[in-house]
Image (cartoon, rainbow, N blue to C red; front, top):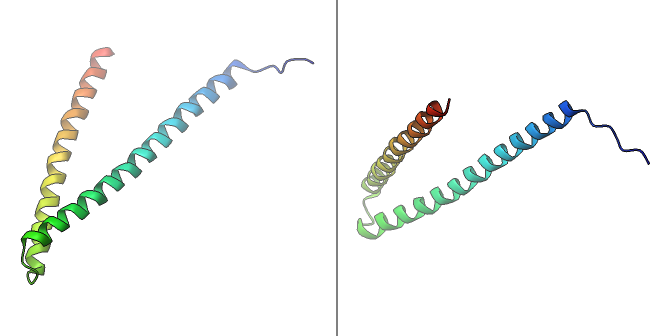
Length: 95
């Protein structure tokens, strides 16, 4: 039986597709695990606030929760920006 002839450009495109597929799946899985982690932190923060703030202060609890979550988000965003900048600088040095 004769071997099928595979065009080298077809092989190259399939390799690129495989890389893009892996990159997409990797991003989706990372996002999913990030969501699970965020929900876990959400639950923890709510429980801590409920434990240490009196039950009748719903608005105060929500305010404290919002401040904590916002502070964590800003801190994480700043740190991620610094890391991304380092990676970009390393990429520029390679070029």
